[in-house]
Length: 84
Picture 1 (cartoon, rainbow, N blue to C red):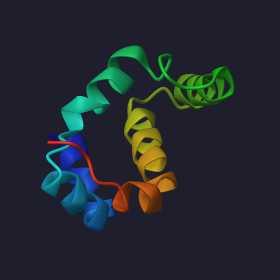
Picture 2: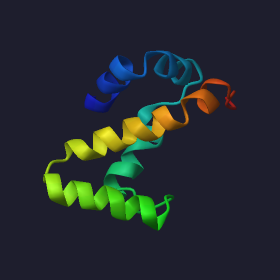
Picture 3: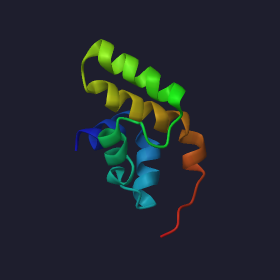
Picture 4: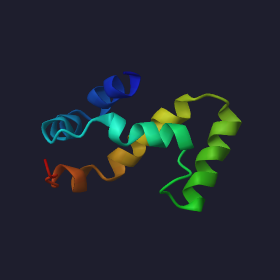
C-alpha cells in the first residue's frame, strides 16, 4: 500500500502506464523487499544499497531505491507494451 501511494505521488505518468498495462507493484516490489535487492541486481548495486540501509538504519531506503530504479528506467518503461 505504501509503495503504491509513493509511486502515484512521485511517478504519476509511469504509475498510470503500469496500471493500464496491468503491472501491479506486487509483481516486482515484493521480491525486492524480501530479498533486499540481492536477486536480479548487480553486486555493486546491492552493496551500495546495503551500505545506505545499514548506515541509515531505516527501511525507507528500500522505498527510495525502488522508486529510483523505476525512475531510472521510466522512459523505457513508458514506451513498453506488456503482454496481457
